[in-house]
Amino acid sequence: MTMPRRSIALVIDRMEPSRGGAEAYLDRLARHLLARGHDVAALAGTFAGDEAPYERITIKEERGGRRARERGFSSRARAETERRGFDAVLAVRHISWATVYNPHGGVFRDALARSAASCGSKVVAGARLALRRLQPTVRHFLAVEEDMARSTCRIVAVSRFVANRLHEGLGVSPARIRVIENGVDLDRFLPADEPRKEGDGDLGFHSSGARLLFVGHNFRLKGLPSALRVLGRLLRSPVEASLVVVGRGHEKPYRALARRLGVESRVSFRGACDRVERYYQAADVLLHPTYYDPCSLVVLEAMASGLPVVTTRWNGASEQLLDLPGALVVEDPHRIDEMARGIADLVSHRDLHREARLAVRARAERHPWQEKLRAMEDVLLQGREGS
Image (cartoon, rainbow, N blue to C red; front, side, top):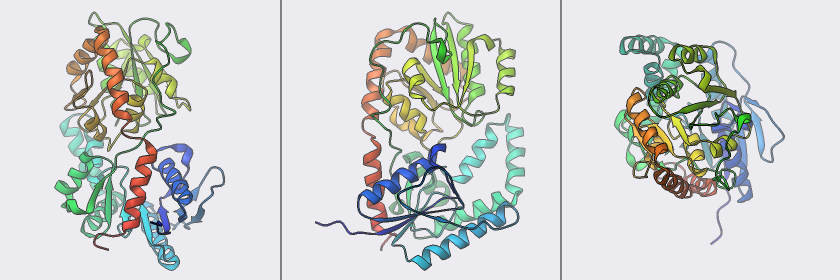
């Protein structure tokens, strides 16, 4: 049976695939769709990077504040897609009129609340959340999310965690939701060919003790303060450990926290890295005590690399870990003792650690990125619910 050829628009505010995340995903999806014979155009306010094989349509930016720019982008992008008569429109940004909506950032109201929760006590978090909700741009995003919930677009959730929140929190019918988890490059992210060598000083790990790895760009939201406290708890036990932090972020307050906790000499900040797979292969545990992650690609990359993971239930990728040996999913990032005990138990038992490494790689092999792109293509060919 011949596959129907479709014209497909992909909508995002900016398109710079080298930044990773939704931008890299859309670039990969566009190339997949082209190879499958479809006509593809990306619509964005700005583009960066090398020339792409798909059409790139720049949406002129509205003048004014953030809310005005968001509204202007949505209006102009909608007019362009209607003028061109695309068969399907996929959006990963806050617009409610697309035929398919793929919220890579998860449910906005949840992300907003969990970001506030990462700021401190319940009182501080509540005050911050209340202030954020007064901001015009935040009110706009919340309103768009409500419009999306009432629309007829199909929604692709990157985890069952996000799908459940769309249904429970926004009343979206489960019939409109398809779960397609993030995929991972199984050829790039591989377990080490041989046991790690002592040293690896160029990566920042100490030559002795458990090697903990934190990877993320939003240090506060991804739980770096908790990771530092876990390290501190381990160093007050018989378990020796060090922590390497990979990612862009404002390091100064976290270096100060490391000093206060007495762990500064055991922490190495490495900044952004193009070859993060080297760190996955050299580490013993990925420590990802996040406050909110729709489906952490970092966790999937670590699993593909044969690296056991410690994370929280606020991470959609935790669904892949619940029945695996050596994996640990805690209720929230404040469970410092629980995370420290789990890591100590894992790294102190070689057989358990070896079993965990094999198990996470096997689970990751269920999520090749090629399969996820084909699944998204199927959704795009279906159009709106009931169409």
